[in-house]
Image (cartoon, helix red, strand yellow):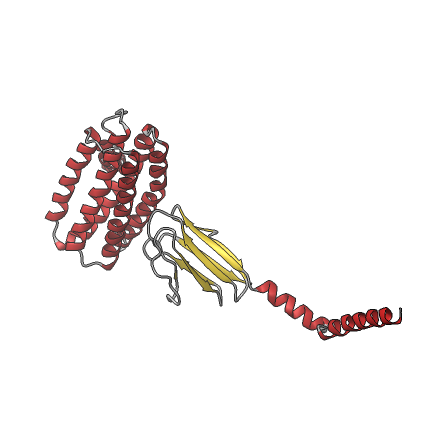
Length: 182
Length: 120
């Protein structure tokens, strides 16, 4: 009987934990976003991951974690550069909105949590967060940002970003497995 | 009339001599043909975080060019012993290599991206 209860707890945790990551971004279910607001949300999402990577580069001594953080910083900067080039071309000014504000607030909390981690627990916390964060961002880009983009070039840029996000997720999961096997 | 015949004979003779000079044995012709068909140029496009084609079958001595058409920087590096590696390739940059043997390769920046070169 106790075993059944434990299993229920595990199953419930398995279902709820990913939702904790995804729900903040999708909390504004079907928020109607303009292209300027979508551009802002996309830039904030990329900036947040660069900020997490910067903390990892300061705190980690693990070669795989440092390599992953370097890739995150490099790739997300490349995406921001492309987004900035596009909005400049389209003469659109990214506009702050509920989604980008929520992303910023969550990123601030995450940065605080990561900075508070000890050297021993930091690497796992950083990689676990990267797995959850990329799952959430992929869901948000695919279900909110892409469908709501009205400009074709903005939509195409977001569509081009998805494979990179999925590759980051796979890479993070690869590093995560390394910690699990230790 | 006699002069015209002489001219025709000279042209025919010249044609025969030049043909003979360019003659090769059937074996030599086959080898030349084989060699010219071996050396080929191949292109692998890096796009959407994938190498396309991911598996390429080619002959030893062929040249492969990787071109980065993705939005982020990539490289190609031999997987087992890092026997060969390209520099980091920005968007629109390419790198070529003459292939001497089969190998598996990957992008060190994105280790989930992998490709294979199979020599015949």
